[in-house]
Image (cartoon, rainbow, N blue to C red; front, side):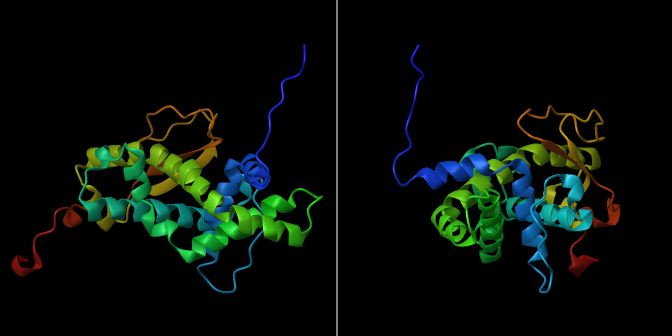
Length: 226
């Protein structure tokens, strides 16, 4: 039987190539670079090959900043968290980061290294490829990573709020959720608040916790009357 063949539209090869070359761990590298680049003088490491290679405090800080900023967007729009099931609504929750020039720079730096993994590509050629596909990769970071992050963490956040009878605004006032662990998705350990199935395509699962409950910060009285 004759082997089936397809084709790639001329001029679109780089877009298909980068989509296949990016891994889940590369998206975590973007978060790490984004956090490191917020402070001048930080050197950027080579791309992560495993979560265990990352400086935990910086990766955790970067992810928690994204999660808490996402929660702040929910509070600002005054929409219940449970309503964020539509793609357009979810995407809007990340406007705060998708328009940040520093994120664009972090994505560019990671994408350059992703292309450079192909030893046949030199630095100059890789830079030209990055310029061509950068907008595409930014869209993939939103669709493939950030929306998956929301899907993995939002049920846990809702459970934290239900457990302590607090809303998103109060949760943020008390410091927000914290990352307890980032483990391979096949790991059998379950966090107290994690009662959900992990999709097989996710290599890692993020488990959230919360240790900042303060009854004095729950629905605080108006300062005029306090």
